[in-house]
Length: 277
Ligand code: NAD
Image (cartoon, rainbow, N blue to C red):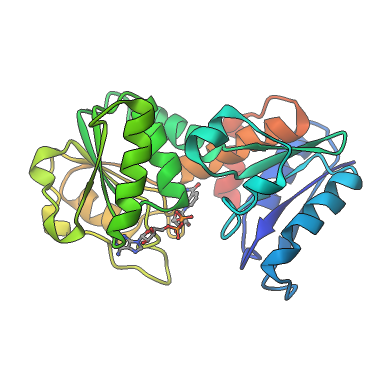
């Protein structure tokens, strides 16, 4: 039996157990995916290191990591894969012979979703809303996918500036710039990506005034509950090409499954499982 799981806070509604267990069952692999919800179990954040050590010692194949631990987990690991070092965040930990190796599969998840969901999208300039953990992965994916310049806006301007500086350091000067939320200029961009939590069922209002969206823009959201956020709905009604957050969830889960099991995941089958849940 392969043992895996997800570590985070307020994660009891996660679809990850379903996605991983369905794919494992389809491949004839016995796999259990447990939720380690620090809020539900009333654990302090400081218990993260002990939990990881225990799971590694008990022979877990690995775990996914989510809010608020994607950065906090880094110093607790033995090794970081290039994808995690690049993004500065870990959402998947492989456990091998007691060693803990950190990966980031959010980046490739978004990259695959963009390539498959919006093929041929213009990428000269893209406006990204949000510079948090997921935003770091998405901005890296946009630049890896060939975006000329990513303009990053966040309510916390310093966060946007720090991310832009990190990205420009890696991808080249000017490839990422920070901009203020109250001075967004969408006339110069091809596409708009939301990586803020705005649009979630609990927070439905879009992070950007929808009259800044024009039919020539493509619009992507990484929020996936609901699948069609108010931002995407407004964009669709204007005739824009849109991309919802499901491709990124499925892509990150598929890659994590491959890291845990060392077997190929069938992304089409995982999409079908996602739709059934
Ligand atoms: P986070 O808290 O690390 O970052 C969110 C950022 O958004 C913060 O920097 C915050 O200042 C900024 N922000 C919040 N409201 C804003 C607003 N109105 N305008 C501008 N900036 C604003 O969160 P995160 O881990 O980056 O996750 C963000 C969202 O992405 C969550 O809703 C999560 O569900 C979603 N997500 C989706 C996937 C996927 O696979 N589709 C993966 C990871 C995260």
